Length: 435
Ligand code: GLU
Image (tube, rainbow, N blue to C red; front, side, top):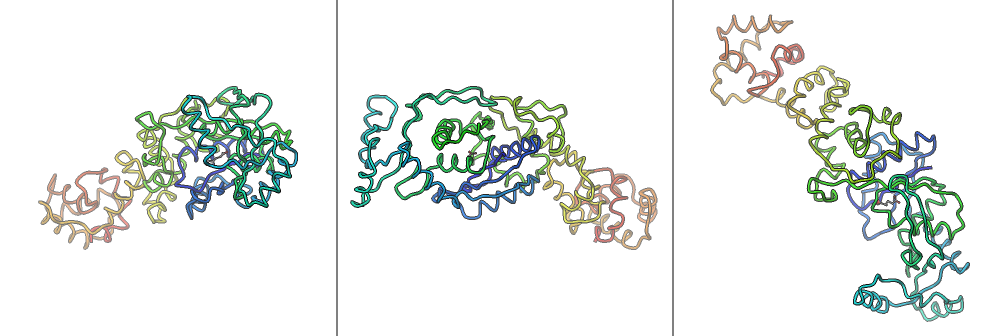
């Protein structure tokens, strides 16, 4: 089983979306379940409504999950497991104060050594715990550091070995009874039967801790890990909130198609047989083990190129619906503008401009009024040639003095696609357009 485990703490980042897409594809390839777990245990950082937004995005990108969990609903499981570890003496209660810990951290800093927990409370007994409770002394639960190196092999990044001191005796349950991130995550993966974890490389340092937790809880199911490289901006820094294009919501609001975004994100670090593809096609060739291990650079121009290619192959009627029309002809009109526009937002401006009231404030004002009158009184003219001949005969205009005002009247713009291509698509809306 695979899972996508977003935190509802901000707009969905493209890195997270890439994690979701790849988890989904690999689950399909292996014929196993894909679940979603909202990691909402950090109450301070949660933002109201972000969980809903994340789920909507998954729906927009057609990445269906078979089960949905909220991590906060598992609090009692996290607590029970922490107490079990305590009872088995794999964990211990620690009542070191913040001041004590801060002093130790400072000492480590002064001697330029890495801070490690002193081990002071490691031998506390259940009698000590009863006393702490009676004295109202806050305490946390720490998991004892491992006795051996933690070794794991990452499908993308290769093998890792972490010494016990680096894992350290870390906190699993805070004084207020809430689990720490690593503990909640490891317990939930274990109880849901997640046996393959694909996530961003920022979680590599959490992995030995999570493996240690699962080992101590007696979990024997082997878990495969794959950490995806980060995505860099054009300054070679990690794409962050400051980069607009890092937000999936921003990309959607700016006219990028889900299919194109999926296509682009799957190109990063992969060598597909074709540059333009859909998600079902990617399922055929995608190979997680062949994913590159170095960071990928985000290139908005490439994404625009891919978006344009997906617009070209999009069904006309489906495209029309993006602009609020059900007539496939509108989608065909949009396609006439595809070389100048790479996003649906830009195309929408062109379509709106055709249907908007026209501006007559230009040097062709008189010609436009004349043409408007002629068209308003013309019979239905089937072909562009019939249309052109009719208005030429009735207006006595020709050349630039005919075509400039005619284009302005039909599109509100001075340049654009061939009128001969446009006319058949707009002829049934002509009266609306020239009004
Ligand atoms: N909640 C974590 C995040 O959003 C993901 C944790 C994981 O995949 O293990 O970065």
